[in-house]
Length: 302
Image 1 (cartoon, one colour):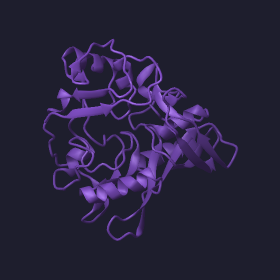
Image 2 (image 1 turned 60 degrees about the horizontal axis):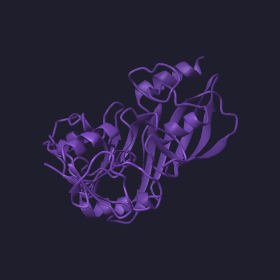
Image 3 (image 1 turned 90 degrees about the vertical axis):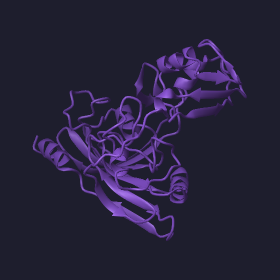
Image 4 (image 1 turned 120 degrees about the horizontal axis):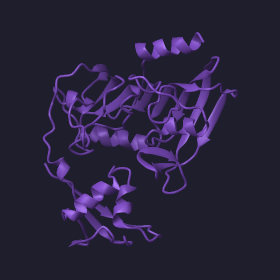
């Protein structure tokens, strides 16, 4: 299955190459190298014409991308999935740490989506490789995830997410002792210019990001906190906690120490939303996984 991606350029006020411009669009998740390969293979056109990597993007340009990597058949796979709630409109899943939410280049199998497709009908709003996915959590973050079973429900839930009306609370163990009881981190997040696989706090092409947190418990050299997201940027809590020098413990990407295979100590414990059909508010909670408790106990005993 191939997919054409169409982009209308606007609000450009800098002299920027097309490979650089496209690599900065988060939803594409393309590296400059991938963009260059697609251009070389004449799979990217601007205003109906093939271009070179050196082409400078201009306002009102119509960019069309043919992503051949999407010519892959998505497989339904039998998988042990912890379903907290399900009805005709939606599913609330308690995702295990280590499970990728949806297929992407380089990883087209063993994702949550592959497992859900085994015996579930999912919405088509987010395209072929993200059916049903209203929002995402990182591979090594455990916890609650909202999935839509039809397009009408998906649109309703996505609008709530856009308007910041969905409640999302996380629990995290972070390095160092946070002395104040509550805090708000309001700092824009964008791609790290030095490492495309990472995000960072930046004013260059960064998007607004707000994380509220409160201290639950303090230990000798760490702090257990609850985080409430007001926005949903990639790696938001992990990036924001690094920004204030309290990295999430066991974080293999943003942490200061070598991490175990379990991954970051971050769990999506609460999700609340208005049901698309009943219009009633629903809220679900989940306990942290056993591996989280084990690591937490180690820090408590220090």
